[in-house]
Length: 62
Image (cartoon, rainbow, N blue to C red; front, side):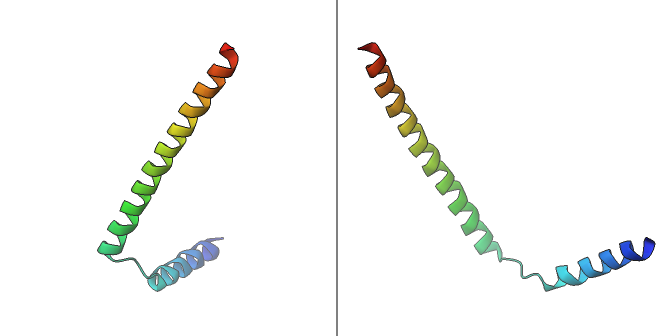
């Protein structure tokens, strides 16, 4: 059991050395893209929700 745990951590360390991490500029760009896409989708869904709510209220009111 101890051998398996030791082997796991050894292999994990080897794999982490193969990782190519993004640069600071890439990380900032990806973060900004995620933030703006999330804000855009939130605005889109808010507009759709508002329109559907008002449309349903108009149907029910008649």
